[in-house]
Length: 243
Ligand SMILES: [Zn+2]
Image (cartoon, rainbow, N blue to C red):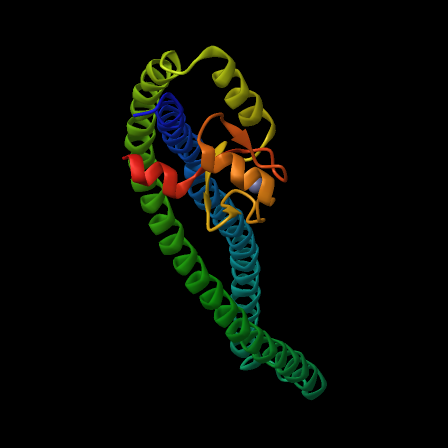
């Protein structure tokens, strides 16, 4: 194996390590997002539950008050009816009848209000049950996701540690000036750093290599950069013929 091919192979090996490392580090950032989304929807549900609870408390207070008014007035009507038996004065009798009539009318009106209120309470209670069920299931999913995430993060971090060791080893095999070029590009461009040239096209930027560079790369003497994207390039056929 020529020295050139050997160096390219080592750089490609380094590239593979770096590519996996980049993917894993991105995963470390992305993985907790699902958890954050779940937490946000749980917070939202709990906010809704709080609101429905407040509304229910208010409706129940109204219902209690209405209940009391109805019972007070029907008590009054009952009392008046008893008194009515003892009234001899016609005028007083009619006055009492009118008062009883008014109270009964008022209570009929209240009964209607009570029906509406009871329906409203039922609607809110059903909503409360739905929200509670939903929030319980999100809580459960959150707990599962949390433990899955914990074990996934642990695995990823373990693998990153392994890769860091492999990277050190891979770096020590690459001549210092070439490694410096690799790292220089790595710090400035999006992954990857080293790419093959297939059918005269750089697979990093998908632009054709100028004929002069293509002739140079086929010689396989020195490590070249793509004139367009500056990534390190090697001739695919050259490389596969040797390996
Ligand atoms: Zn390129």
